Image (cartoon, rainbow over all chains, first blue to last red; front, side, top):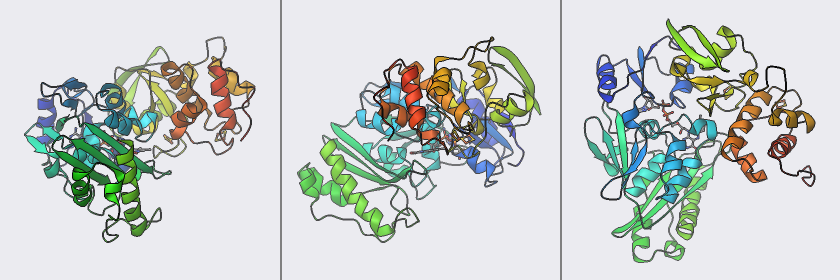
Length: 262
Length: 161
Ligand SMILES: Cc1cc2nc3c(=O)[nH]c(=O)nc-3n(C[C@H](O)[C@H](O)[C@H](O)COP(=O)(O)OP(=O)(O)OC[C@H]3O[C@@H](n4cnc5c(N)ncnc54)[C@H](O)[C@@H]3O)c2cc1C
Ligand code: FES
Ligand code: FES
């Protein structure tokens, strides 16, 4: 690792002020992605602004509209423990990595990173959740901007994520056993006003909504509604763990399983 | 360089660290507690698992500065002063839950954390919890058996797979 200083602010305002001091300053969530990145010398911040001491962005609660509101600095373990009203979200959180990763990694870090194989982006996009930052509220459909890219500005911090609770939902993760990330993951959520299907792990563009499947499921929420539907292998990630065609096939299989299990 | 202070195995511990000093390096190099191992340094293997404020974390994936003011427990803090082992440690010995022993500190620390949350886990739950702890020697069977035995369950019928 290159050398850097660590600051541990206790409020969002102080963290943002530190981040705005220099473009070279960077937020540190749980460090489960950033620390390995620093070790590989793929990042060289001057100051790491540690968010783990900011109590105002931790914890899970329910707002007046029944949405589950999760602080941006809440760990995966705390999300699993606190989101009982949304079982598919609990299952997703408690199947990220391993217990030690879940005790450190945070929802804000996962979303800001937007790894193409991460689980949270699928949950947020399928739920039509709202990402709240120190500057604004961003709808899930506007937040993800391709592999490792998001709508966040320099120095903008995710303070909260608000999840509307669907009538039915399920997340199916085909685990890549070495990394424990999703080789392909599909999150299906059925709301009174429609079904949303979000796919992670598959596309070179990162998480996406499979709108064809959504339309089919809107009329008939059953696996048979998906008969004959498939996503093209073009533009799917191809690596030693699976070809693009294999991932495209998995998208359809995992979507069916999610609908059946919802 | 900055000063960090924390409690390690019940005793105050402090030292000078750089921003980039990992908790595991502070524990091993500054405090000289070399029971916590570094297997991969990439957050995959779990040899470096310690407890921070009671929760299992990978000490290779946390900075020492982040542990300021916390209570850290390492493998050295498990047995009593007189050397009496915990039930988990005793079971690892009795059921031969180790071969080279490199993964063992992390395995024991993960197992202790699991049993605190789930005092009577099933075999599947034990295997699931240990997903982030890799052992190159044992094939896991005796580790799982030891943990089930430490939880007070009868393991006489658990056959080697
Ligand atoms: C062994 C292992 C297995 C894993 N398995 C999975 C898995 O199955 N599924 C999965 O989804 N993930 C998995 N992960 C990734 C894990 O979920 C990470 O915790 C997560 O991707 C990053 O969160 P973090 O809090 O650790 O962020 P960090 O690593 O601290 O930061 C990541 C990035 O986000 C930025 N950032 C952090 N917090 C915020 C914030 N609040 N606002 C704005 N920017 C912020 C940082 O500046 C950095 O650029 C795994 C990781 C490991 C090590
Ligand atoms: S050394 Fe920390 S997980 Fe391997
Ligand atoms: S006993 Fe050798 S790595 Fe587990």
